[in-house]
Image (tube, rainbow, N blue to C red; front, side, top):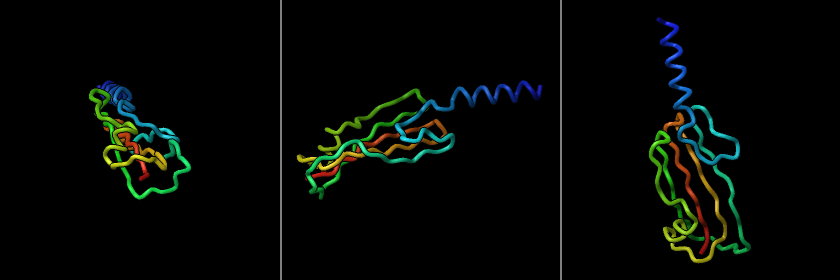
Length: 105
């Protein structure tokens, strides 16, 4: 009976693990991930404004949001883009969020 419970628990954890993942240059951690990375840059060095747009995933069952560059530009009131980065985080494969960060004028 103890072996059956252990197998059931292991199967459940394996089935749920990684259900909600995010973009990461190093892969997703089993318990927690919080990483940032570059997307692109321009020769427009001025960057006094920042815009952020995010998309979220819960349990791999429900996902939504607009993490586009366009949405981040609109949120920050940016018309000339200097650079674009992303920030991703996950918690236990149950929740993940990926955000696009735009800097510019």
